[in-house]
Image 1 (cartoon, helix red, strand yellow):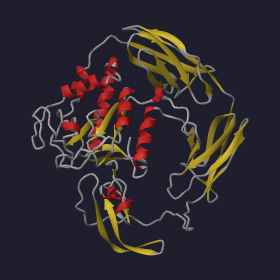
Image 2 (cartoon, one colour):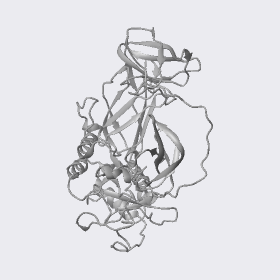
Image 3 (tube, one colour):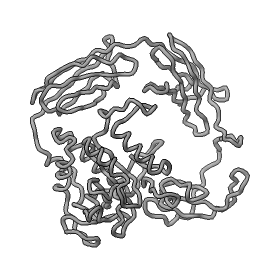
Image 4 (tube, helix red, strand yellow):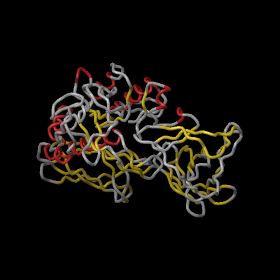
Length: 456
């Protein structure tokens, strides 16, 4: 869960409530059974009061493990922010490859003098996937917290009986952490306000999880004798598990506590299966094959063009469904859709091309051609991709930390809606803008409001 620069307190509370009971796109039909096991949070408020405590208490009551970045306001003490500041949050500091705490990793203490962070994890120059594709090395407690969230997932996979047992899981993380003394903000060598309980040791935490006899459940999902890939399999019993079938229609849950379970399968374009009851036995594999019935459907195909020419690499999606395809070199696409009303949407690889929408009604096979149009704004400007070559800079900015920004003077005026820009702001998050308030992820942008964005 990552905060944005919009929404304020009400938006963050609404997001937290939604996580406890996800709804449909209309905000209706809440499904607490779809709540996640673990929520990793990369955001905080520079305040210490109970404004988010009710949401946190709801998560804990539902057995959701709350992992929080301890934020990046160090090296001073008393720099932990809410909700990481709360005693019941499990907050994470950041250290580097030399096991040294990151200078900007926030320090405790937390609520009622509680040691904060609770633990520290790798958070300096960590390779991470980025929005829009690709990878980048980044730093901050937002890079450290996911290590802890992932470790909790491993613990609960190794010992299913611990799933949603927050207290026992915290004890495992705390007890297996590597003690790292640092007395600058108080505490003991074993538990201090810089490293918390110490440095995360994922292997030791999982190894310390209690062993128990387990069984395996697997099977194949088919429709009309053919395997059904990407079907959602829900297994309900002593524990609840949700898995997806592979390309061969096979699913497998290798670590289940013995007992009675009900298996149901759902796949878009198919009738949901009637639940099947099975018993899982310790040390044995139980097989439950499920047959689905496919709903009547038709094949929708056509050509996507731009400026009269075929457009390849364009993603065509049936809105509100998991169905999508990518056009080939001739601009052709093909989707098999259930009978009924659908909205086709296109997403082009070029950022200068707008989204095309087409409402269709499927009653059988049909042809629908789609035309891409360039993006325009309210002033009538049209986006176009330039053909100039990239010119590398010669002066490196002395920017460090996760969310810092600096104003620079441009080497020549850059026209923007008729006004030449001679200065710009740039941030370590990779953004540039004409004012600091327009830079996502910048600490200085936080001056426009009380919230601090995620530090990616």
